Image (cartoon, rainbow, N blue to C red; front, top):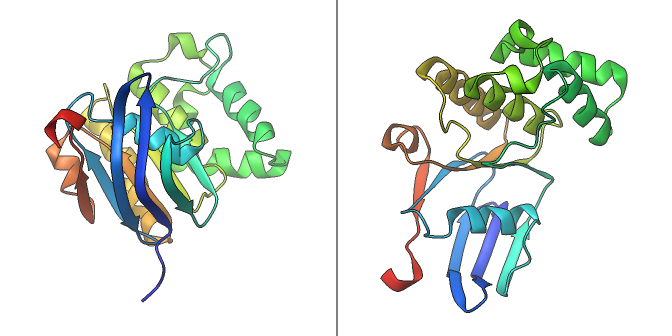
Length: 202
């Protein structure tokens, strides 16, 4: 049996005296698509941020066996730049060559339809288009682990279908995906679900 790509043991995080994540232990295998569910305030975003490296655990152990990419709830897009300029900017930050950026953008245009709004400034984009752009940036390096915090929040059915179609393709190619979602229909599309509870519920 292969070793897990993501493993945490008794992972905890505190905001002041409030224990946001309390002794969370999980194992996720390569190529799995796993949904992370729970009520608001249960610690889903905090857990994802610890895995991404944004937050340092208060205690416990954490292991990720490959490179990772993270898409947050809040947009990191630059509002006064066009969609294409944002894509190019983050491509350079991710260490891609000009040719690689062109190739990745063409692929994202085919899969996600970025071409239709590439010359619009981010501040002019719909919430669905912003999510598509943010998602395409998160996957541009072909990460081994993809951490998605509510990637389809506020999007229409068509956009949700595009994102989940791409998630399935990535999984088929071996990418491990951990995604938070409030939609039961999305959790049903995953290999399995991890449900976490607020500390007072434990």
